[in-house]
Structure formats: structure tokens, C-alpha cells
Image (cartoon, rainbow, N blue to C red; front, side, top):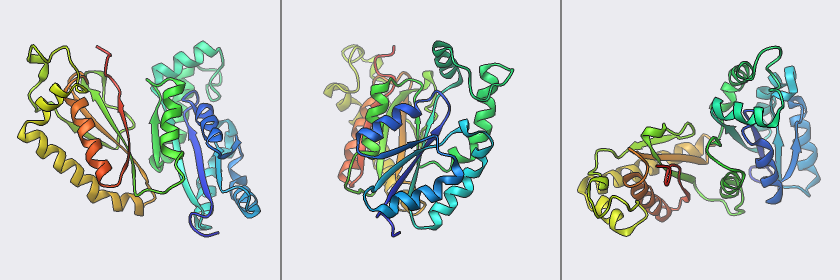
Length: 288
């Protein structure tokens, strides 16, 4: 089976992080979805479905519900890759506090908690998934996302039929709310003058032209954007060579309202000019 004739997305990640929502979004985009497949059957499933010639995009949901069978996943993935199939791994993540809240609201136990509590199950699951998370092409942290936000992210990553060199999510955030756990690259723009201290700009956001002009009017801001875009251009070939076609770039300021928002918007515009397909997310805008 030649490269790109058949596409496979492996959907995995933490229980409660949104795997079912992601799978439904992929199905709505025209992917053939198989849920809770025993990993040992992955190579045979790919060969059978791919060999039929009718399905060109297959999404397989694999997770720790498979118990001991989950340990077969790494070998199964390697077998599929060795067969020349285009494989991408989508990993759904969320913070422990949010996952506990979701399990408690659904009144369902974590599949690995046993006689312990939900946190015990989450700890065991993170240990099992560590290597798989490290090899993921795209990690989505759903802690602050609703189902519609998650579907938009899945649509942006897997909805296009035309292949692009690289796809990027450019995210603004506030350091006081924590660094995004799904970021591949983090930029800190707190060195720039803060519009918060300019009376006529304080109540505006980085989406307002006056704030954007104020932030990007600084020589240091323009140099930062030049270097960040250049760095991403430099590493993009390496990412693609290693099979990573998605990158999340997080730009942070103190509160995620002014500088990071303006810089994220401007960086995204530059990346689009470089042929990168971009989704812009302002994680903490409106949170204060």
C-alpha cells in the first residue's frame, strides 16, 4: 500500500478527555471510524479495509479499556508503519481536576481505578499512555474546551482533503492561568510594553487594531515575529520528515488579553503567507 493512498488516524488519550467527541467529528468528516479495537487487530484491520479500495480514511479509537491488550499497541503501530500506511496519532488530554469533575458528573468509574479512587485510575492511565503521548502527531488539551471547540479543532486538523506542508494552532494564553500542556513551542511576550498600563487601551483586547498597532509597533515585537516565523520555517521540514504534521505554538503574556492575543494574530498571518494552514485560539481571552 503506497504512501497517502490510505490514511489512518489513531485516536487515543485520557479517559474522559473527549475521544468519543473526536471520533464523532471524524465520522461527520467522512472518516470510517472503528471504536475500541483490540490493538493486535490493527494491522489486519488496516490491510482488510484498505484493500477493499472503498475506504481511504480510517480512524481507530484505541484506549486502556482494552486492558492487557493495550500493551500490544506499540508493536501494532510499528507493523502498520512498516507496511507503508500513512499513520497519524491524535491524543486527547485534560487536567486531573477536570477529568475528575467529568467522571463525577457522569457517575461512572475510571476503567483503571479498581478499588481506589478516580485519581488512582488517572495516575495508572498516564503511566500507560506516556510513550504513546510522546509519539503523538497532535495533542489536544480539552480541559477548557466544550464539545463544539473540540469539534472545531478536529475539523481544522483532519477536515481538509488537500495536503499542506504543515498545520499549526497558534494559541494565546495568560501565564497566570498556566502554560498550555499541549504546546509544542512556547513564546513569552511579557518583555513587551503592556497596553494594560495605557488608559485608553486597558479595556480593549489584542483583537482591537489600536492594541495590535501598539504592540506590534515595537521593534522588539517585529523582531520576535520574524524570528518565531523563521524558526518554525526551519523546523517544519524536520517535523514533516518525522511524520509530525501538526504543531501548536503558544504565545503568552501575563493575562492573555493584550500582548499575546495581538502577537498570536500577527504570527498566524505570517505563517499563512508561508503556506501553513493555521487555526488561531485565544485560550484566556475574556477570562479576567
